Image (tube, rainbow, N blue to C red; front, top):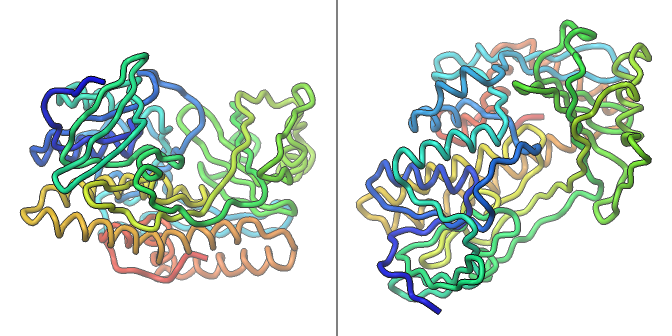
Length: 408
């Protein structure tokens, strides 16, 4: 085993958006960081998050990335809720956030495109990223962290003052420091479908983002720059494998599309470019700090994808963590980061995303009617609608606005 010469001030394990933004933010504070990414240096366009909320755009603007995002992304200025069988629409206008943020709207911008921008920024600022470099062991003492890494057939040791685990839900770093990750997995898998079918032609008044409820649970329709994405809950259990019959999509997708178009469109004639099942979790690490190791993003917390808060809260972690490193009293600032961000996840993000998922997965007609009526009532009152959007946009958890009532 070779000992890598020189100790890195900060090693970031995980080269996704959270790890890359942490490195860029640290560079702004004059702190050298090295990213260790186990995967190859490639850009895959598979489905991940696409929602960027106002405070996240603020953070990305500070890194000089907002212009490209605003030019290329789909700007959402009206958030809508409907039902596949019931009449009515709750429409929340984002202009109610004017004065609370410089970006009073939500942007749909695929995660792989964000990664592309972040890679370019890392190269321009000469922040080192080591691809194909897997962390296989971690040991720490009072002076820092020792990371055992494998790259191909070679094994090295990297010494670092600090290590940040931004390596996702199955975090090697979190497991190495034996931090528990309690929570639960939703019993049924979700499905994401991607299609270029022109929904806006057949539904001319449809918003770029609309959340429907229906007899089988949620049906979310999201417009990204390149394609429409549909997410829905299925009856396939989390531990089961879903086997498609030829090109036949999931039966829930067929039934929901038939309801959406009232039988005017045959879902079997839609060309699907993606048909992917995934499991959804609500989990929270017992602590975000273990001596010289800190956690951020999915390594620290997982939440339902409904509302697009997973990627955004991870980016907020990255921003807060880098700011903590930049403080004069670094030791107390890092403890404050770990305690504050965990408390934010536990007290706000986890309950909010759980509640949102429960609401969208209602199946009985009476429960769905009550929920839609409540949302219509909220949307009709400018003060209540603003409070709703502040929470749904994560402005309160980013410290840019006062905390309103919890989203229904």
